Amino acid sequence: MQERLKELQEEAIQKVEQSSSLKDLNDIRVAYLGKKGPITEVLRGMGKLSAEERPVIGALANEVREAIAAKIEAKQNHLEEAAVLEKLASESIDVTLPGRPVKVGNHHPLTKIIEEIEDLFIGMGYEIAEGPEVEQDYYNFEALNLPKGHPARDMQDSFYITEEILLRTHTSPVQARTMEKNNGKGPIKIICPGKVYRRDNDDATHSHQFMQIEGLVVGENIRMSDLKGTLDVFAKKMFGQDREIRLRPSFFPFTEPSVEMDISCKVCGGHGCNVCKQTGWIEILGAGMVHPNVLEMAGYDSKKYTGFAFGMGPERIAMLKYGVDDIRHFYTNDVRFLKQFSVEE
Ligand SMILES: [Zn+2]
Image (cartoon, rainbow, N blue to C red; front, side, top):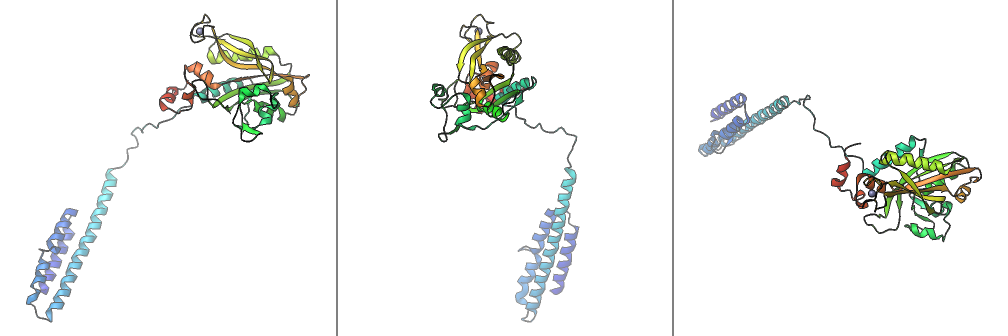
């Protein structure tokens, strides 16, 4: 019986060594170690053995089982490792294949408009100036000739944090801050883009948050004709060389005189249509000569220095330029809307 077990062990180990697949190994395992295998059979015959022989044979049978099982496991590890190496070798990456295109986003239409306007004015020697969106009442109103209780404040109701701190209603406080920083000295040529806030109900043409770009020039001998020439260059660059501009008298507390600028309607060429409400003109922005009070409050001698300022809404410019019919499209982040601006101009 001992010899039979030794024979079985040698036989099984030889087979394991010769096997070349995981399936072969499994067959060997079942054949030798399974319930119907020869070792089990030997153990079954142990009843016929004497009491002295029984433990010896039992121990030997277990030794043989363990030796075969260990050999199978070692061979299995070896085969698995070889399979992985073979897989790696066969799956090398072909670096000459073209890559998958990476999805690239595009600039928001308002960003495009703002950058276009910034570029235009930088080309004319302006600098970009920015300031806080949470602003002091002083810079947002008082320094701009809008003392407390001034009726024009009603047009710019805001969100107040305290009595003295609010969300700015225009980017004009950046003008006041820049003038103050320049300490009564000119010249100043700045463009101030940024977000502003008003207590408005949102609809197709109103939003409680919107963008604004303002411009300010302060220096000696700055005249109304300088303002008009600057706005003419701006209008032709943004809307086309064939556009005419006109200035209409208006009122802003921080400029005197104040004007609204219109551009001629592109659709009807000035004859009147639905787009221009039959007037031939489309309102674009407000402007004017800086009010002497504003200059004086910022520390400028208004006898020596003059200046002009203008302010516009990039949303309105974008709506006119791209034919957008609702201001809310700019803020709802609908990809179907934003994707239309993916072709860089
Ligand atoms: Zn028209």
